[in-house]
Length: 111
Image (cartoon, rainbow, N blue to C red; front, side, top):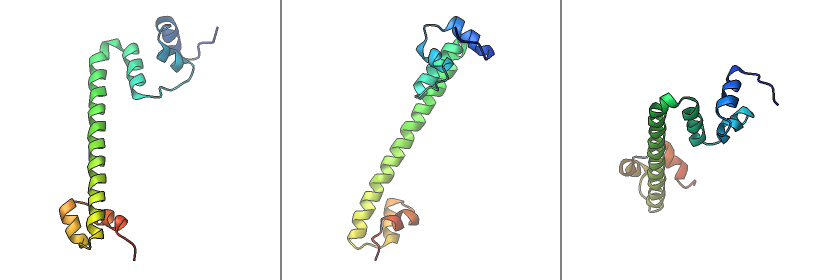
């Protein structure tokens, strides 16, 4: 049997024997996915389940928002690149797409 090196190890070993995420944590493995971390937290702190789930949902929403913003940015870059190829001025492209000068410089053909 392995030695208990941290006070919380005893709690895990006695109460969470059937929980694979907790057992992996005891072996020194870090949760690889946020979902696993939240499951571990809920297992250890069942009385905080609602708070943990609310926090988890907030993170998901933030991730979706960041994904949408990145997608919109990539679309704006693609459109700007096409407009630049047609000979329009960078100032016009900046105004129409909302891209920064730096973004436009990055996609502008180098002469």
